[in-house]
Image 1: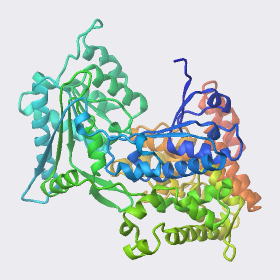
Image 2: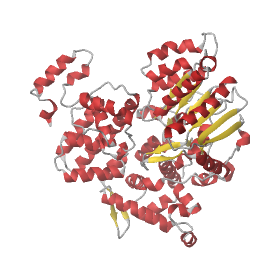
Image 3: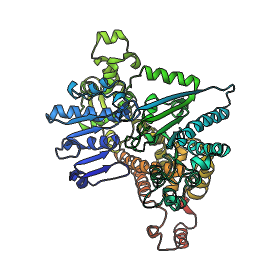
Image 4: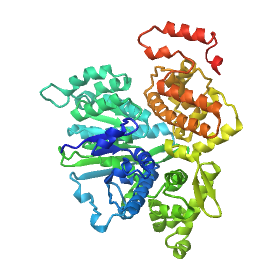
Length: 610
């Protein structure tokens, strides 16, 4: 077709020329939100040149990230109306109960709406739900029982010559499940006969021996531990190379069982004949406890069962407690519509529209809100959003409720000094602080934290500013895992020139330690910590630059200078108190750097520069 296709994500940056020359851009909702925010009135900008927007997995509207999709689509619809330039939108989903509501949100005409039921599935799917009961509440006994049931399903499939994917809900659980299955197979004398594989025979010999050397070179010990038993693991905490290796091994038949987390069900085309979901309890960091795996996730995982090119059928099994099984069966019979999460992030997206000039008054903000999926669901299911049926009857368009939401968000932004709200006229004015937040994609909650801390401390130290960067709400999802604490203590002792409180209890403290390790170029052994460090470094660079700009707008030159050198340290991975010769790390011996820095600091290290 001679089309140029480019990837535009957090991992893959493009120059303006490269992005402009591409016919197709594959991107994330957040990245496209940033692009369209910056497009403004420039007709030649990347966001304004888009003629076709394809949203895959549109049921993500129910997810935390769904607010971004709502914002992007609402912005696009308003752009189309103001410029009278048609842009086509295509939404795709395999698990969407209330597709008509989503179609209304996307402004899809009836002739453009297509629904394909289970009868259209290329490979028929057999679904099985198993509920476990135990006489005790001992969690270990419950897990052992689920492992035994999972083994029975796996061995039944292996005996018929099929591969199996077992989905669990924690990174640690992938390795534990693989070990449990191998132990049960050993006890039942089925490990050598059915688990261990020689793979698909081909011109290059059997797959197992072809991958043996590559597995031995992997830094991930668990990959090498489970490979001889015909098992593999896959989760977001693994290095990208190890994940790719595991996917290739499973695809080529070098391993027969893959224990993985739900991330494999989203965006990666790696089906198997048999899929098993072991357990349905998922940790929710917002609620600080366990909750049921969503029915949309269950259906998404079940969709991995059956390979259209190779199988005539697929098998999917859900193993959970007996009580939870009843809830899942009920949800399958009576699908629950997906709801909007836009209210939680309304302030951030309203700020972006004010900065972009598309919303200048409260009245315009109310109109903008009517373009969102939130408005569609408020009219369909008002009780879920705190609206009575009488209110809906009196005001079918719900403009009064929309006004209340918008005014609340505007007052919050005004309090955080991100916009200027004129209560009498309803005008919304742009403030430099809000412009910086929209440009760097910083949340209003983070801006509030920055304002509060900087106002209370007129001359913060480098140490306090670096920790403040890690207090941003962007890092609140960084989890502290019990098994990582020893590794974090080692990192604090060896790679952190700035003091970190021990033991680590808060996500900000973990981010603070890992950010210092990243700048110090410390070798981290734990793969989950490597994954967390990359996430923290990627966001910390953006947050530190935003804070630098904010301090400039506040006329706080002292803090701005410190934040600039922190941002440069994150970007270059060299501390400002280290010699620039560290750029040539492979050219000189480490004792040369230490001698130079010791002489420069008078032998007192970091404290000299504080």
